[in-house]
Figure 1 (cartoon, rainbow, N blue to C red):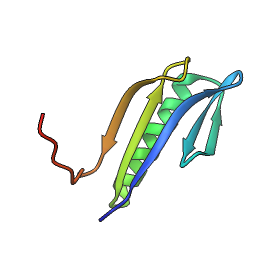
Figure 2 (cartoon, rainbow, N blue to C red):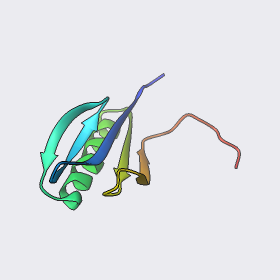
Figure 3 (cartoon, rainbow, N blue to C red):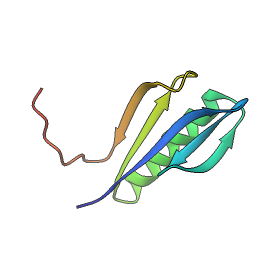
Figure 4 (cartoon, rainbow, N blue to C red):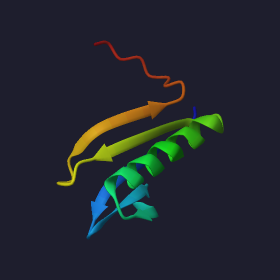
Length: 78
């Protein structure tokens, strides 16, 4: 089973960062740039044959949106 790579775009200080597994992988001046980097990282995970996810946070730190890339093997009734 392929492990999903999750990238969070979160505020930090006076800027924004992208985190993977709690570690900062990139720093950005704007929310827009951070979100674009998280989405790009999620697509890279998918392109390498895995699963990727971008979790986009609001400026207060709460989750605004989640985007999943790749063939998610879970089946959820809903």
